[in-house]
Figure 1 (cartoon, rainbow, N blue to C red):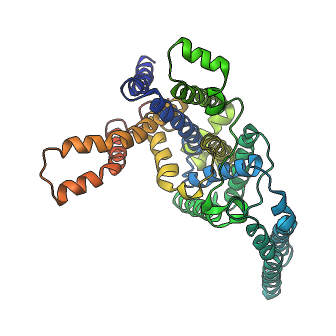
Figure 2: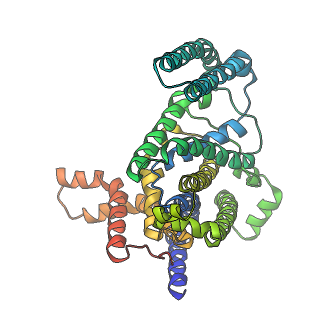
Length: 432
């Protein structure tokens, strides 16, 4: 316990040192991003640390959480709905009905040529019917003021409501993935989840009617009770406070807003830790670890391994989706082009491995540490490289090193991961 306390105290010292040496704005920005990544890492730890499920599709569940904010909290666009909303809904229902009819025919009919012909007729006919209804409606929606909208918009509900909706979207996607891929071997499951995550982000980038694609959805509302800096700077009580303490109103308002986000994210993280710890120490958690350690023995004891894998896969993905929604609410915009596996899959896995898979507190430590390193190296990397190359003569080598400074954080992550795997292969705070 004393070692763990020292590790968390050292982690807090890093954030405090960043505030004193750089600025508290930078320190709080890094902390907020790290808190969100830590919540995602807890979801991955449930899947890998509890059940041994190798999910490389974290990015897709994060993106679904961001989409939930757009559909729940974005400004409604009545003109777009009037132009093609019913057609899009009807087309999607036709597509779902086609899939349902194909599944029904596959299960009810005997194997043979007739079943194959019926399936082909259902799928081909349903596809053309779907496109005949869906495509004109999409064209009508995307033609509605494309410079500003070009999409269906959202419901205009409070941003806080979008967070559980993001978890629900991710859970539904995890259920669909799990029903088809959880029977596969771990390496095949990794390939399947990675491919499905790429499909999800590709849809978000290209379907303008849904989320404006690469044109991005801007001006998403902030979650209550986070204020806007402009409103704070016009508030008499806030101005009196800054005047009394001789503070800069602009910088102080920015810090106050970030502290509000920190409070919200920390509250969600604490709730997630409490729930995951209760689950881990319950009979369900012991059963999951037994399945992880020896599936054959657990199945021989009467445990439904596939069903339990599906449960933990859905729960972990829901937590990732909630964090994805929280991140989009903080950013105030959805930018599908920024979703990439390096940041939203590889980095989250590094947090789990470095902290200690199977240990929730280890995952928290790994999330805060790697989150700090990832962002601080981006800030100070060019300065460090500038100092290293200051004595070098101008030339191609020096220019190459200076241009490569932004990639120092990739090198840093690799070195940290190698050191931890060499000297503490079970993580900084191993599973008991």
